[in-house]
Length: 533
Ligand code: V55
Ligand code: FE
Image 1 (cartoon, protein in one colour):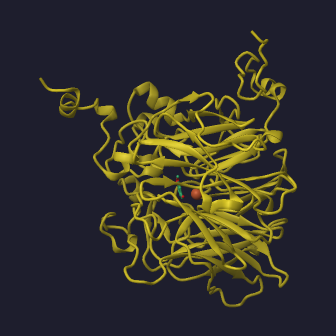
Image 2 (image 1 turned 180 degrees about the vertical axis):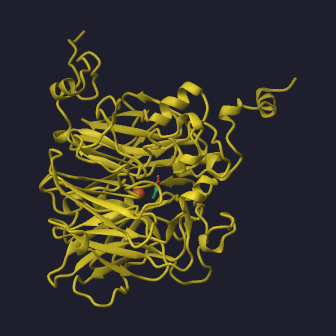
Image 3 (image 1 turned 120 degrees about the vertical axis):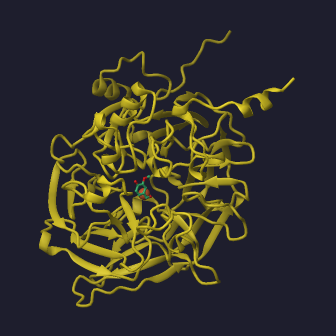
């Protein structure tokens, strides 16, 4: 008699959930499709009592087998994790963003949207719907969550229930069809600097910059043309400047998209490009462009204004295409040389500083190395965003361990002093993937980088995920608490820590969304005290 394992091995899942046998959809990267919660997680270790707030994280997790086998993991449906930490306890939720895509495909019980950022590959019945997967970043603004995907407007969500409210356009003030996944919020003023690119539709060179005050009132709006049509994923901001960063990932012309081409293709000879625009009172003619050689830029660490009138930008720099799944036109993603780290002992990726002189006559810029660490997903203490700073946190490849990167998987958490170049890290070993960290100040008055780090770890050995809390001052000791989940989650992209004092009160939540008080659960309130039996 065959046992259960032998039986299931012979059976096929339903076609709508038969994921292709490819690295983005298999093994530790297989979709999880989880939508639910765990109250009072089991926590080996001790969650410091001083931690009170919610860690939100955004995860691409494909709900349906993709229509196209060469689909990329960054096209997965966006799910939001919320880990509410309070009084030494942790409660977990994950909910999918109810995007147009989610709602339509759920009704159809199959994928009907097509390739990543290619609306021409969608089922004709869904054309012109918002294409967003809302899978890149989750930020907190105006007492609500905004789930972000750079090809679309944000989706607003309730920070308590994770219910999706719908697309958000800053009270009709934001008119572009695209919105970056990396707006910057000034910790002192609460102002948001943001932008959209391909801002007049697919394949347009138009970029729009917006500045909003903390209540969502528009302060600045400036439209300009980029020198070419390429991905503009992250940005940076200082008191005086906004920086736009353009890596050599070229948007394909609309005629090519109509033929089913991928939205982006790596160019092997085009330069990494930067543009600086005044933060306030910007005019399209004020933008100044700078270029480096062909190289990859993912995310901004920090930026600040120097005493010398220059603007400084710190970020990881990579000398090959980390987005190997967008190969040069006509090349195969798995074999294209531009997508592989060059062999040899040379630096393939390090954390560098760029200097832009607004009065420069030569557009060429050269970076200076700050830390020799191969990492990404840089994070600083948010209170120092846009200002001179010392400490950088980074998701890193432990050079002594071998954790194969599929899409971008790291196995160490690094803390670097950008002034002394000192690097300390804690490695998860060879079986656990970690992603971006969020920083939690110990108290509001604590000095820079004095506090905790939170991130989600995927244990490939036991096929489970857990949330790690580390003391940033004792990073190399490893986690002080491991918040266990009884299931596996997908690797996430970006997240945000929101302290309890900034979360809406119960009354504010009920007024905002019309959800009755009974539906609001223990998530926000202090535990009720029961009479002694
Ligand atoms: C990035 C991620 C995206 C995307 C474009 O990290 C760029 C870079 C998760 O989606 O759509
Ligand atoms: Fe990003």
